[in-house]
Length: 412
Image 1 (cartoon, rainbow, N blue to C red):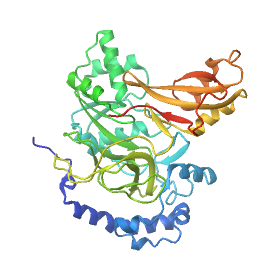
Image 2: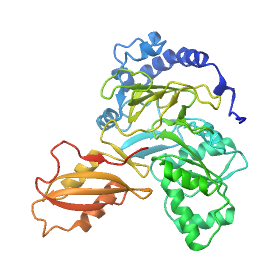
Image 3: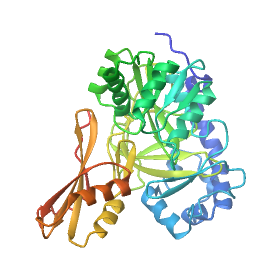
Image 4: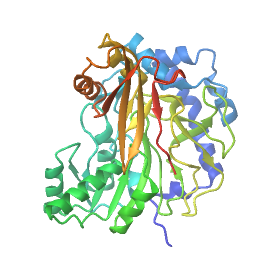
């Protein structure tokens, strides 16, 4: 199979890529420490011009997402990690947590074009983008990437399923961008209404796990589906190629896998926390701990791209959990519990039902007979922006294991 590349960088020798990354890292870190007081504090005592290898990089502390949230609360809005000022920054976003994020400069600020190209998108494609454009950068991440690639974007966002299906039929949209589950929703709605959605031939999905059964279902309908791994803070970190065997690290990122709770890299094949350094000049993130689990694969992709590969998303290193593309944090569950005086404690369980994520919030209450779950379900939706079921249980019924969020989905 002849594989077309986005650019020559994808085939460069790995040692050449490594040399280029670490040639520019010292100056980048020095500038971050000079212009961002948060980085000057976090990296106190670090000599940036010694950071010329992975071994030296591993000596500096990981900045984890929980710490970033705390620092932003102490010194709003960016915790001192903004390099310079907001002059020239096009947008600022608020992701669940909350976490404040400024948009990087450029036509493809989250580096999405490369992932879309590998998924088969080209400049003639008319693309439905079903990621949310509300508050978070979700919709913008691949919107910018698609337009940088030359695609035309239909900015569908979340919801209005009937209208989205009509847009597929009327515009003959050729590609889909969104969460893995939502494409199934659209296809089933089109079938239910007797509308033709067969124009969609390719999809790039993220924000949730693409289960093998769901991928096979899409392929059975003539749709080639690839995944990318992206975060609001960092952009598109890794992506699947045509061979769909692991995710290739995007150019211009340094990716490490560390033992959860430590700064220590682990060898290829060992599962650990994904830690990323990005070269964002506005909002530099250096050894940023994503809280996601993955592992490095020890062989290059057979497609011919030479960058390192990761196994994709393998769960959470902490209890902060992604559900239908949105993070749910233990602090949000605590916020819900605080609203109801009769609740002793709560535990959110995330499972799969068919091809969708489902949430059940179990709450220990003193009086099972006189408690109403409907109001709590509305509060759950308001706080997390996701629907879920509320289940009341007697005091002492929940496990005494410290878990506030239990992800019980099984990943193949």
